[in-house]
Image (cartoon, rainbow, N blue to C red):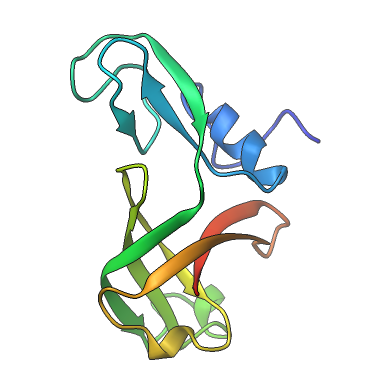
Length: 132
């Protein structure tokens, strides 16, 4: 496993490392217990800098979505149509991510989803979700 991740910064390196292992993790505040995403250097709830990483069950629910049918850039031409969705994860955070899988275009608000890990065109592992 590489110590360099294209999407990582000092706050998110552990998140990206876990993704390469097929794990979804979030930061959890040791002081107030708040679970947050995206990673940052302090708790978004109480502003303390006492954060640990906690394993997610990788399950959630679709809050909203859009189906992209027209590529915004040439690199996306082979991907359309694709789904971008706001997912409420069981542990509390919300993630804006892709919905993937054979039936992704049949998505509806309220659908249950689970995390999956797929490489992008450069081989970087991305947490995404699929319908259950």
